[in-house]
Length: 103
Image (cartoon, rainbow, N blue to C red; front, side, top):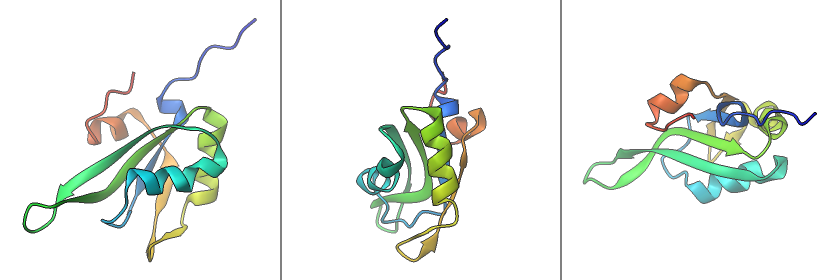
């Protein structure tokens, strides 16, 4: 019997406290050691003058749920450009917070 496919939520992590210079490329580089990254959604804010910057939040979706767990366990409380980031399993509200459909 074939296992049911895991949901996007089960394969995703919420990243908080990123520096405003964080980019999709940076997040992919951070997470790829734990498996294939299938998607990155970076929260965007506006700096003075209207320049877009990272809001400090992101969702990273891995190809496998186990990879998301490994990434969360290994990257939580790690330092990125002088800021300690928080990484946890994503829930439906995390997707809503960043304006992303979770299905």
